[in-house]
Every structure is written in structure tokens, then in C-alpha cells.
Image (cartoon, rainbow over all chains, first blue to last red):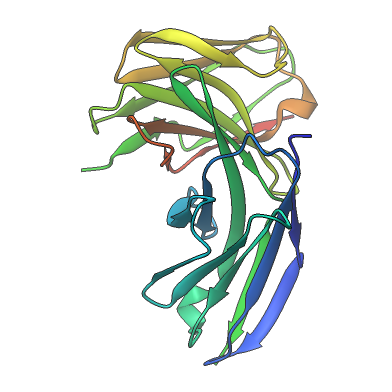
Amino acid sequence: QQQVKQSPQSLIVQKGGIPIINCAYENTAFDYFPWYQQFPGKGPALLIAIRPDVSEKKEGRFTISFNKSAKQFSLHIMDSQPGDSATYFCAASMATGATNKLIFGTGTLLAVQP
Amino acid sequence: DTAVSQTPKYLVTQMGNDKSIKCEQNLGHDTMYWYKQDSKKFLKIMFSYNNKELIINETVPNRFSPKSPDKAHLNLHINSLELGDSAVYFCASSQDSPNVFFGQGTRLTVV
């Protein structure tokens, strides 16, 4: 199965809160799991990514937790700010020939209230 | 300075017309892609090219024809446009890495 399931569909938190977005996959051929942030009218921008041999990765206020046995991974945003309000997409990648195929989750619309 | 640039940003056209979207990347990447984002914001790969060679073709109607004149350019031509083709189309690129960089998108509206 080449699906990536993402939840919740939308999320509202107060400034300083820690929104958590969850994703799950089935295909063990996936070997890279990026998160993308998209603002209205813009293209998705790579935020942070992890490989399945690592259980956690932090970059600034963004942390990915990865559970290989459960085939699940999540994004945590520490000390969230109104400027973090955007749509977040998880994705799973597999090498396809000389390229990489990204399978995206359905997106989470995050609103951080001041 | 834009890494992956697409033109036009907006495209409104009538059903049955033929249109093209152009994409250029100045990152020196060997691989380029087209993704489609529908009205529910779902992103799906359409095509990928590596050094001008088609690698991925994801069950896209043959009305869609990508063309890569060189590895810095990947254009998308769409024939006989249909209402269901209305979406945002993103060009993207990558180089020896699963990190994919997206352009700003072209919003296509078919009326």
C-alpha cells in the first residue's frame, strides 16, 4: 500500500502550545520521511526529515518522533507561534530509478492563536 | 534568485484548450518533477525526469505531456483541458537526495 495516513485534519492551539501531528504508513519500502510546511499561495517547503533507523530528530522547535515497529511518525512543534500557522504535510519517500517518489499525507491545517 | 520557478502563476482557460506551464530550476539538480495539488490540498506526483529521461509516469491521462529540453527545464503541456484538470501544479527538483524542493505553483482554472 502506498498510502500515508495523516491526522488530525485541522488543529488549533494557543501560542506556546505544542501541536502534534501524526502519520502512519504501510509500505516498508519507504526509506525517508520528510515533513513539509505550506503557506497559502506558496509551494510546500521542506521542514525536517528523518530516516527509519533514527527514533527522533530535532531541528530548532521542530521534532520528529519515529516508531519503526508501529510504522508511525509524528511532528511536534515546541513553543508554537502564530507564524507557524500553515498546512503541514507528512510524506514518505522511496527511491524510484534515479528519482525519489514522495507519497504525501492529506495535510493538517494548523492555526496558532496569539 | 528563485530556485524553482514556474510560469505562469495563474492560468484561466476554457475547456478544450491546450495550455503549457513552464518550469526552470537554477539549483543544478538532475531530477525534476511535476506534482498536482487538488482542491482538497492533496498532493500527488505526476511525473519525474532525471537528466531529461522520463522515470515516473503516474497513471496520468495522456493529455498531459511533460517535456524536458535540458535538465534545468521541465515543461508541462496539457491538451483538451477538462474541468477536472483545475488544480495547482507544482514543479520540483532534487539532486542525489530524497529532499525535494518545490516551486511556487501554477493555479490552473478551467472554465
